[in-house]
Length: 262
Ligand code: FPP
Image (cartoon, rainbow, N blue to C red; front, top):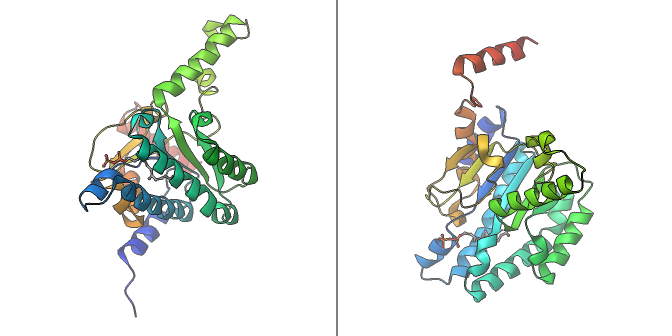
């Protein structure tokens, strides 16, 4: 009999325990992946698109509710024009080639960021897929496009300031919930886990507000090499963590025991 692969054993183990509801990924290292092979940087991004497909499929199989991918940051516009154009083209290709798979698998496609800044040839397939998948009940796949965490918080604050100026909101009634209603991630579950690839230890303006109590996994693998097995290892790491949200370990254990009894 053929021996099961490491990834399939890991997947089995991960599925047996609670998985994070919402995972965000900073997909870093495409450029370096290409450079060490003497290839143009864009080839790294192209190979990175295959990791996007594989990781999305794995996330869906293990039962993650929301996957948010940092595909293009507000700051990425300042990269060489050729690289920006190449990334836009890859996004268009992805949105067109994955159309059927996303619909067939009940995935809902979503986007956060200043999406209006994207070129029309990206916005159109994005809107089509968003519209056609809007009623899907499976995993929500969110692409962060022209996204920045500070930009998102500023945008929310502008909306709140407007509501206060119009007399619709009293400053005393402004709490976390009221601010969150204006974040682009409104409606998504709380962020449980953030993964960053490429061995760098930075959060690079990704989901800054949402990350407050997320667990972090830094994988020492460049994004194009980050496939199912590497992702499952991060999920398994997450499952080992004790999330305390500022409480003590004893309090958390007591809560768990009470929940188990109820
Ligand atoms: C960071 O690597 C990666 C990006 C800026 C873009 C991510 C894009 C993709 C994975 C492909 C297209 C996306 C989708 C959703 C199909 P880097 O270029 O900063 O790498 P480096 O740090 O090694 O230079």
